[in-house]
Length: 362
Ligand code: HEC
Image (cartoon, rainbow, N blue to C red; front, side, top):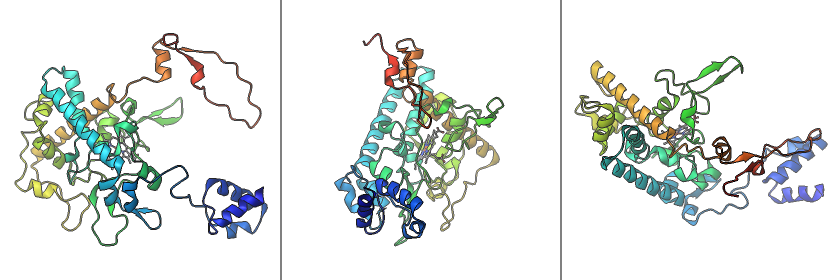
């Protein structure tokens, strides 16, 4: 049996390309002292079994399983779907705000929704938060082709136009997390009982939240300035874009009149704000604001983050509708289950859906 599997590895042109082969290779490595030198690190098959490349993406696949990212941004069916969704949700939020019926609580939340679904807040006005945090995918990466080829990392706002450069678009370093329940993480703190850090946002908790005492609000201030993501050269550019947006009056309704319009932006703001963060030719630079205007712009940028955190913590994003939540709400009860004591070396599985019973739904 082992010999048959090993032969199928060899058929893949000498490279063991799938997981079964990788496992068998591992077994061979243990049994043969010379095998290590003969078997290079296994690389995954592209595309993996069961994944069909959407026909529209086919022209974007380059030799060596690389992606033409600009082609993906334009053609990928998921990317197109996400942009349509975000336009719809943006309009939905705008209509809600314009209705004049929102209470102050929902006004802040809806302002955050407008900001999250607004592609104009990126340097090239082409990338909203939601492109990487797709509502249909639980507010995480929603593009299947990217899941397979980049591990879920999404392209940012800025194309790379140097001929032959790869990748041909700036791209985020990691897989985007979901923002569901993210605002429930407190500012980063050391928990003495656990002897470990707790709280903060991002995989590495670097959005500590210490300044605003709100990790998610501070997290939201990061992507607009991340050179691989929305790539604005200055937070004041985001504020300037907010001041030009259709929802600027709503921003001022929530945060007070003058919160945007009271800032004196220099005459060449549009030109300076069109140069991506990190660019050297022409060089990216901060807006030359007076100290007072700088403080004012920072305040508006804090408000921008706080509104986003308000949207993320709201029931539309963080709904608390899991089975465990149903149990806590008293609409499902935990069923005591007798389970065999696991034998040594056996995994003990977490409770499955059968551990809950919903009396109301039968
Ligand atoms: C180009 C893709 C991209 C864009 C655009 C983007 N994000 Fe993210 N987001 C990521 C990635 C990647 C991470 C994880 C980064 C890390 O941990 O270093 C992340 C992490 C997060 C987290 C952390 C969740 C947690 O549990 O700690 C939140 C919240 C979030 N993003 C919200 C936003 C908001 C709000 C915006 C817009 C202002 C935005 N993102 C724009 C890719 C993106």
